[in-house]
Structures are given as C-alpha cells and as structure tokens.
Image (cartoon, rainbow, N blue to C red; front, top):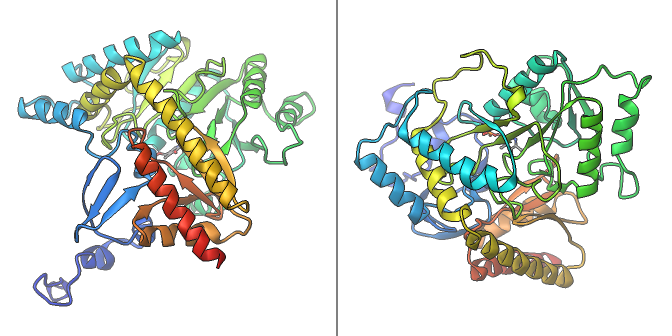
Length: 429
Ligand SMILES: *Cc1c(COP(=O)(O)O)cnc(C)c1O
C-alpha cells in the first residue's frame, strides 16, 4: 500500500467513510446496512458525523440494553478511571471484580435461588460458549453436543459447530465436529411437538451417542427471533435431566433483561447446569463474558481455559453499577414490564394496520415477519433512510428484529414503530 493511496482529508471529494470503505476488510457487514459515519450517541439516539439523529432499535445487537452512554454507568466508569483503578488484571483479584461478584451474587443469584460458580472467560460471547462446551465435555467425558435448528452460538470453530446457518458454517473451511442438530420449538410447524423428536432420537435405537450437553437459546436472536415456549423448554430440560445430559442456556442475547426478566428462563422453573452471559452484561458496550457453572461442574484445572483479557475491570465497574442500580430493587423491572406492555400494544396496533405481518418474540426482544421473503431487508433500508436503525435476522434475513434499549421511552418506542408503519404503507401503494 503506497502512501500515494492514502486519502487526503483536504481533498474536496473526501468523505469520512473513505478510509473504512477503502481499507477495511470486505468482511464488514453492519456498515453496509447502515451506511453512515456515527459520531456520538446518547440513550436511544445515535448521531452521524453530520449530526443526523438515528433512533436505535438495534442496540448493538443487544449489547446496549441500558442505552448508549447511560449516565449512571458513565459516571461510575469515569470516577473509577480518574482514580487510576486497575484497567487490566488478567484474573488477579481486583476490587472492581470483588464488587462485581458481590453484587451479582447478592442481587442476581440469591433472590432467584441460584447457586453458581462464576467463570470469567475471554470477553466475547463465543469464547464463553467455547468454555461452556469444553467443560461440559470434560465433566461428562462425552463428545457430542446437541444444538437446534437456526441456532447461533458464535463464530469460532467450537461455537460455529453449534451454529446452524449454512453460510457461516461454510466459512469454517474445516469439518465442524461433534455437534448434532435437533428441531427447535415450532420448526416443524405449530402442531408438532419437536421435543418428542429429541426424545425419540436419544432413546436406545435412536442411534445417537449420548451427548455431553444440550445448548439452547430461549429466543433465537440471529436465527429469526424464534421463541421457545415454556412447556417445550421444560420438556427439553426434563429430557436432559433424565438422561444426565448437561443443560446449557445461551443467554447472551436474551439475557440481562432483554426478555423482561434478568435471565430469560427464570420464570420457567428450570435450573440450567451452565448459563452463558455476555452482550449486555457490562451494560456499557464494554466486552465482558461470564459463565455460570453449577458448583459440581467446576472441575477445571487452574489455567485450563485461559485468556489475556478475562475479566475486563472497566466492564466489572459498569456491570456492577448496572446491577446495583437497576436490578437491586423492583423499580427497574416494574418499569420494564410496563414498557413491554406498552410495546405489545403498539405492535398489535401495527399488525391491525398491516395484517400481512406476523409478530414474534417476547419482552423487548421482538421480530416482525412478512408474507414475502425479501421484504425485511427493504424495510430495514427504508427505515434507515427515515432515521431508524433496525436490523434483519434469520437464515435469509427475512425477519425484522426489534431490540430497543430497555431504557427507551414510550415516545421513542412509538416513533420507531410509526416509521416502520409509514415504510409499510408506502410499500403497499
Ligand atoms: C452474539 C451471540 C453470540 C456470540 O457472541 P460474540 O460476542 O459475537 O462472540 C453467541 N450466542 C448468542 C445467542 C449471541 O446472540
């Protein structure tokens, strides 16, 4: 790359996205769907470099449940940094980690009667999934892991082996081993209980080697906002318990309040052996992942799953602040459940105006389906032109996925849906 190719900011044809468009790898994706240069963000609004506001129904794919630059989290972080708090600490004991663990146990685990050991993995979701299946294999001495149709568990090889999307799997370039896919709830239509398929395949004569674990998303984020019913999840859980198979909930996207409760499964009377959290755990968009392990499963040798960036201390600070401010009392949850009720009404109204659409998901984790395959992408693109960021999901991008921040106002929820409604009206003409 010669210096002559480097762009001149003073050139009158210069646009701010030139550097990214010219030099960033072709692998980039969201910037193709939302082609603005973003400069700052507050709450549920992002601003471009030209100061154009965009209402955010995307929330960093679910990593910004408390909105952009949440003032409570920001203040705690600035305060910590200004006092030269530890920023990098491998897995050393730090006061930031002590505070996080204390609040997580006190305000999240104890009130829900959950007893888990905490493992801080590398900061991405996929790293935590890798750790989850690694310990499940070590603990059971078995190889196979059962995953479900349309599942998404991450892009590194182990997680990718559990991810259904054929295009993403092909990118591996090697065989993806030791995973078995079973039909998710609803995959064979509304009348077929797919837990019976799982049960049949695991019976003697079903031919499957007994798996180490079953890993499931209660709401499939990347797979099209497919939602498991309570009864289906409970049946899958029962099957795992009866056969001594570990039950892993990947709550990376559905957790941290997105479904309406802190854990997406907490009202379902199941107790997963392993829970995976990431995306919104830090609350501030800072990378952080956490594995919750039933104590007896924690048979790691020291250092057996290592990593330089385990336990991001800045993320401990914002995560702890989010927990002690938003989850320690009932206020935030009650406000959230009112907001969800309001959003349900707004969405029902949208569906009355546009009977051709379908609604899916629960909590503030919602999806809109259309009667034709390629509409969602067009609606997303049009909505972006009208100042709304909303992404698509599903194996062919056929679902519009709505992930507003949990802190969004009713007014903004209404505004976002009005933009979608206008786009749909224009398309109908
Ligand atoms: C995003 C996501 C992952 C992967 O997390 P990364 O941080 O992108 O590696 C895994 N599982 C689910 C359910 C996710 O939504």
